[in-house]
Image (tube, rainbow, N blue to C red; front, side):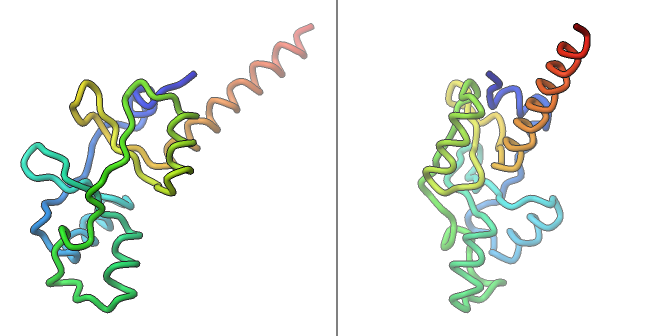
Length: 143
């Protein structure tokens, strides 16, 4: 069974981040620049939260908060749900579905090693299933 470590090995482990004192405008700009839906909120080397498109929509756009003066710390999610590098894709998908989240920071021995999205996991699972189907078809037709 594939793990989050394998997903990160294939997709890359680059994590985009922002400081809690930066503005929501800065966060949205970074998400657009990097074509991602979430940024980890970092104070130095410490992960203190996550800010997502959903945070922006619910806590800024719908409530009429000023985009250019609201700090990321005011809208970020501070309590993180995390995965370990050895967590299987199925376990991670179940956790993300249960907790209703789309992004999962991945740690190994207490250190941040990457960030996966639910899309990353579904993509990996789809590739895995396509490989199995192709293998089975070749096996069946070779007989």
